[in-house]
Amino acid sequence: MRRCIGAAFARLEMKVVISATLARTRLRASRATSEKARFRGVTLLPSRGGEAIVESVD
Image 1: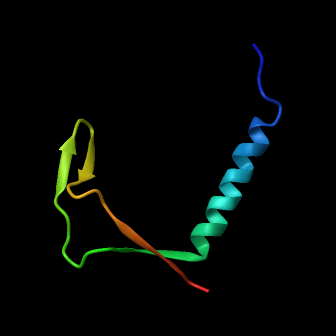
Image 2 (image 1 turned 30 degrees about the vertical axis):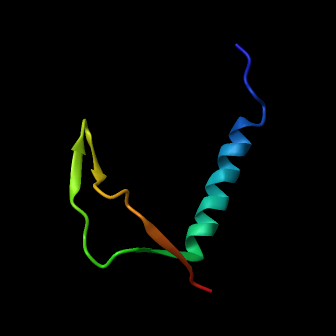
């Protein structure tokens, strides 16, 4: 079985980049009213797509 020798490093790098990005941003809802959750199989989905606004925290 062949494996990529850089796969473990790539996963580690993704975790570092995502956590650093999320530490510097804040998510907020695009609408003031809450959305109804729609049941789909095992998971719940927002009825209008779950739009969010990303704001810088700097």
